Image 1 (cartoon, rainbow, N blue to C red):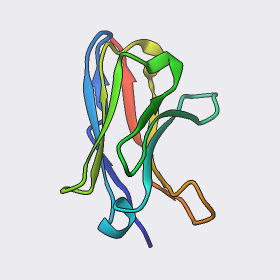
Image 2 (cartoon, rainbow, N blue to C red):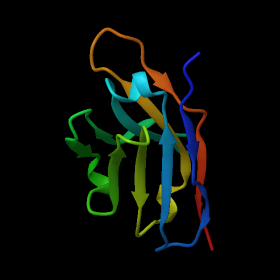
Image 3 (cartoon, helix red, strand yellow):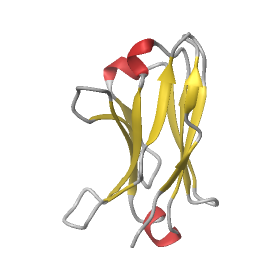
Length: 117
């Protein structure tokens, strides 16, 4: 069973920052594109950011300029740097590995980010 392991969530005040991490098995990380989704209470899961295996990135409009996705191929880890956080960023954040083809995709267990205070 493929496991994506997330870390770095927590409670932060508005305007604050967090960095989420997601580590994948090497065979997955080297060949898959890595994505971050989030799911807020009462809302559907939405794509936040994506980075291809070649390093190209894309973001949903509401996080552009505030969030940064990156990957460390030596550590098989993808990061999501969250800055200028607002109450609307409160959600469970999920790491996803997707080959953008017919192969299976893989999910992390989800990690809570709460903006409050």
